[in-house]
Length: 306
Image 1 (cartoon, rainbow, N blue to C red):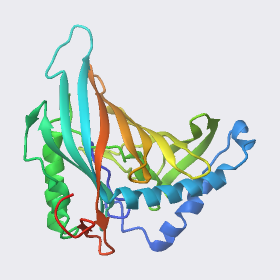
Image 2: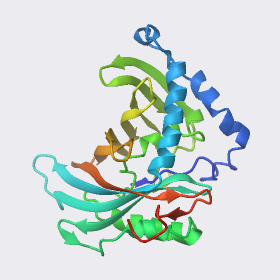
Image 3: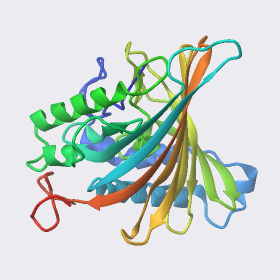
Image 4: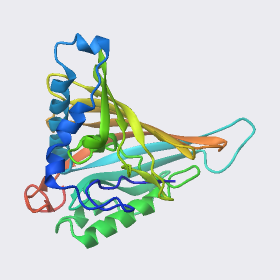
């Protein structure tokens, strides 16, 4: 059972006080000090010390831009049973709204609102999440959004409870207040871009089980070297109780003028279980909102729904 990402800069299970500004400012230095170079990468035209800051800057800008959008998610989950076993649902198709919000004191927080399950409408088709934040990221709006996301998580099939199956999860390890606890290792260049492995070292971890157990993450990111653009992410988080993997590919949207999540593939399994859950999600119908300096969301024209 897995919980959504928790903020680095807030107290979590005795994690301590908020991270001081000085620590946030030196996070880049800490991250770069943790970089190790493979022999192949050492011969690259640009060192990883040059590529990583470029990627960090890109992720920060991506969060600000994508945090002003609502997208529609088509998510198909299936349960793969071991031979001789059969239990519960084997397939589910969900349609949801997905929104990334900068929550004061908690950082970038993803929310999902399911509006259709297996072809059956479960609520009115409206931008319910976005409407919650039209008056700002108030405590009441955040709590309502969390209830909506928890409500949607019950439509997941398979054993366990989880709400970390979101396309922006891996990127949350590269924002300023998280990357200082990550070790980066250069794995060289391929046709898909520069590959960098990451390993979470800091405790408490960004995600945890519902029982409060740390769940350290590791994975890979694919980077376009000239721009720092992240074109693909792969995240794994596992321990003695659970194992999960989330792979996301990004694609440039000409109309929006930015890269957005295109496809997410995820896998979840409890250790000792006879089945695993696999999912494939695609994203479309991106609707842009304007995020004001007061951290309030409002339609670009100040009018009604997009």
